[in-house]
Length: 53
Image (tube, rainbow, N blue to C red; front, side):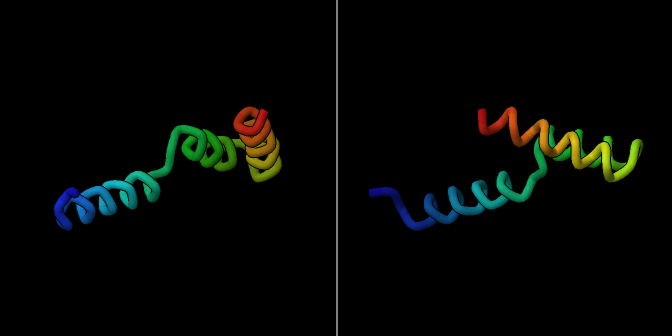
């Protein structure tokens, strides 16, 4: 069984990766800032559709 510090390191790395925005978040933010919230919302729908289907 792994040591307790191995679980601690794994937990910290997992939290850091979960808190870091990915490429789709950068795309949505840049699109929203450049072209407005309507374009950002349409991009959100597109990325969610690509993720789910």
